[in-house]
Length: 313
Picture 1 (cartoon, helix red, strand yellow):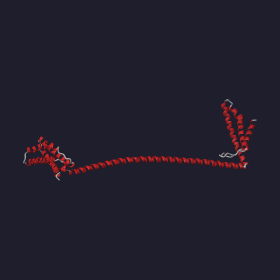
Picture 2 (spheres, one colour):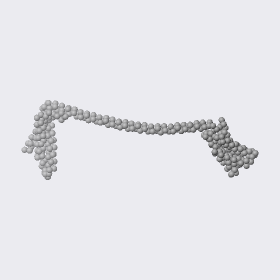
Picture 3 (cartoon, helix red, strand yellow):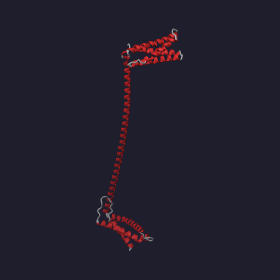
Picture 4 (cartoon, helix red, strand yellow):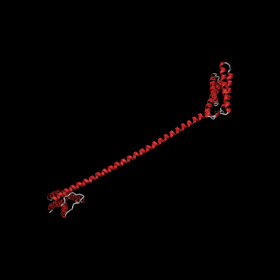
């Protein structure tokens, strides 16, 4: 009884394959007729019957020979189903070949379904390719936008840095111009101060400078007399003492004119060197230093005389 059922299942699978539609599955479902539905039912029934018979006739004894566990039983039945489906599939291919051979319209429908499936597959692939291209373009645009943004940020940063550097440079230029202007103003003020009445001195201070000029002359003349033998060293020492005695007075003389104040400072410096040098010479008995002191005194007289001469113009 078992083997006839096997042959019956195989026959049913062939017959069901002949009756079923051979068209390739597409997005447009085929219009199943009652005959094609019967064919599919025969194939399913043949698969079930063949699974049962494979299990009963061949695999049950092997799987349950040593141990009748649920796991072995499920595994055996599953293997039976796989074998049955494989057999039905192989036999079904033959049934489809038979249908295509005897039904010209089926062959046309099959070929049309193949073309339609290929067209739909191409359309799907084209859509995927287009989507991939769109994605690639979007990524490229995103990357380009990011690079542009980065470039703009860098340019903005460079522009800001340049602006800061330009501002610093401008500040330095302004400071230099201001300093130059200040120096120019000082120079002009110094030059203009030469024209101040009486050189910015009081009448008393002018008379004092006249006396200092004469004092410097007397000291230099005494030293010259000593050199030629017309005066003694005591005369020179007396002149040196007068320089020391009068020096505090010269520090009381000043001018409101920067120009004449500069000349007066030079006269004071030479005056100081003259009296300091001769004082040191007589204290240390170094007569050779008296000549140096006389030279300083002559320079001091020259500046006093220059001041007196220019303020009279």
